[in-house]
Amino acid sequence: MTKAAIGRRELFAIDGARGDQTEAWIRAASPALADTLIEHAFGSIFALTTLSRREREMASVAILAAIGGAEPQLRLHVEAALRVGADRDEIVALVEHLSVYAGYPRAINMLRIVTEVFEEQAIPAALPSRTVTIGNMTTRMFDSGGDKPVMVLVHALGLDWRMWRDVIPPLCDRYRVVAYDLRGFGGAVEAEPASGAAHYAADLAELIESLDAGPVSVAGLSLGGTIALELALARPELVRGLAIIAATAWPFPAFAERADAARDHGVAAQLRSTLTRWFNPADLAENDWSVRYARDCVLRAQLPGWCAGWNALDRLDIADRLGEITLPTRVIAGECDASTPPGLMEKLLTIPGSRMDVIPGAPHMLALTHAAQLSALLLDLEN
Image 1 (tube, helix red, strand yellow):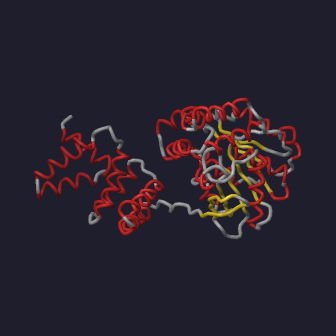
Image 2: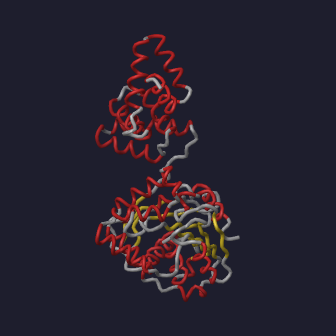
Image 3: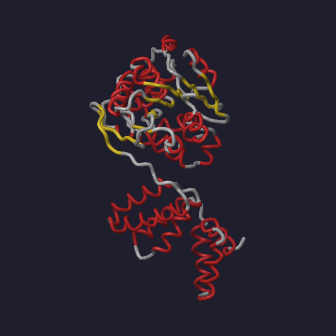
């Protein structure tokens, strides 16, 4: 394949059929410029696999925004970045990063173009969050607001409220949706580590009381599901319904081993074992936003919060009390979950009146990989 053919392939990958039109009008005015653009820029530089297409487009967007005066090209490369797999939240984060090095005027100009492209492509705006104080903990919280029944979403160990970002929008049609960061993670990374699952549940109780919205539905995934069970046992008057997703009520030796491994070798060293538990091989191969987000959360996780989460699971003592829960409860499992497989989740059906659903093909982090299916089940929670 010639340099020209390779260059046209790369141009098509980022710009689609419009790339042919771009080459044509440049060639009509300057054949030499067209040749160097196609054969050198795209055929020699862009074609190198040392950077992925997504990484190259993110770099191009940042450079064009920083130099200024290249707004048409900036728009084109924002569109290209989306086409080759960059995520909305990543591009907005790039705007924020740009402000540090190129200043606010450049960042605001970029944000204006980014927002216009999102609107043209019907890409929803990023979900807003704010800093709140719950007891002695400062954290980040999303709150859709309004006077609808409340559903509180509780995230998994190692992640933050954003793991629910694609689950939240459909729920807002029926619920006031609230999601927050557990102590030790995300916006609450500086909080005192949890002393156990009951500590996390006490935080959740304080959050619910602060909403002043009556009993709420609570959905939790993994550690979040365990916290929901703890809350239902400790403060049932605060809860109207439960969704326990890919979670456990039983301690296993692996929980203490994971805390010990992080203390001995660091949290980042747990990346491989963690992601292969959380995702299917196909998810890891595709490496979309959900995997990139989870990977970055693990790599940036702080040891105290990480160990506190695993220690809380290691010290669970609620299994014999599941029969005390009288709330409407939906148990949701992922068919391919290696951490909390359907066979384990079935044991939660000792909760009186509970029912179980299994999402086909879903791994442990099904809120990230199977958001639409999970949203549909949560919308039907109280039925």
